[in-house]
Length: 133
Image 1 (cartoon, rainbow, N blue to C red):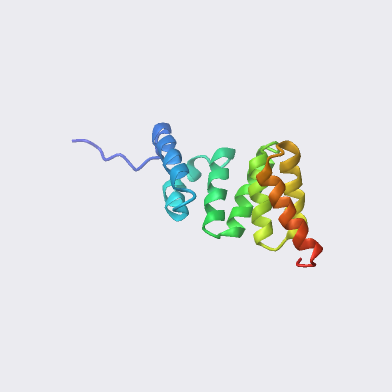
Image 2: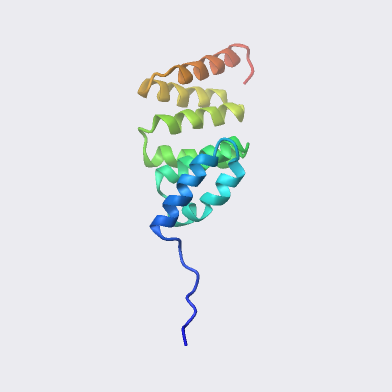
């Protein structure tokens, strides 16, 4: 007679596959990405790459408060992650918190001055100049 094994945490390999699948889904099907990513989030809640992917999925599915929490956690765990700061800045921008958004976007751009980051700074600066804050 074989004892039934209780359901266990997914293996490292299963989590890796789920993470990669969520990466593929994040932009076009963010809710599906979050479903696939859920066991990874539960198993590795303090892993910056997992929180960043969750934050991106929340951002793309307009769950902006959740996105802010996940991305803030990434920045706390890895302050040098310019992309996390960029997505956090865009999240804050969408939440209408333009001054906070601008600070994150400027830090991201200082770390990695790519055109996408510069464009985001320009958008936020223009909105602030118009008094839309």
